[in-house]
Length: 144
Image (tube, helix red, strand yellow):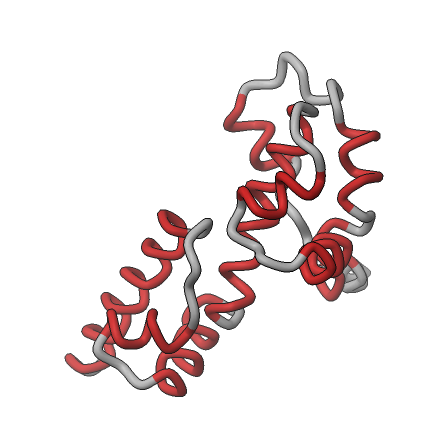
């Protein structure tokens, strides 16, 4: 690996960490790129190469993970959860939630309330992690 490649990886990890911390804030690729001293195009290409998804895709996955936790609590409406995780459009939120989780947020909320009671948070996070449709539909490897 070149020195420049290692520097880029450090910047990319910082961008990922920023998304993890500030997922509920308005973030866009241009702002993330400015913070990393990279162009938006370079950041998008390198982020996807390093982490397997675009910065926007990663941000939405973080938002949906947090939304799942809030919906399981059961004390907030879907609209309140949408805005709490940083989404500004209920329609976009519901569409992305359904893509990642497989059911609309209202159905998830109704079915998930109380199902994870008593499970340690670290286990709950792993078990309830959203799976992208392309990952869910990937065929199991055939073992001969």
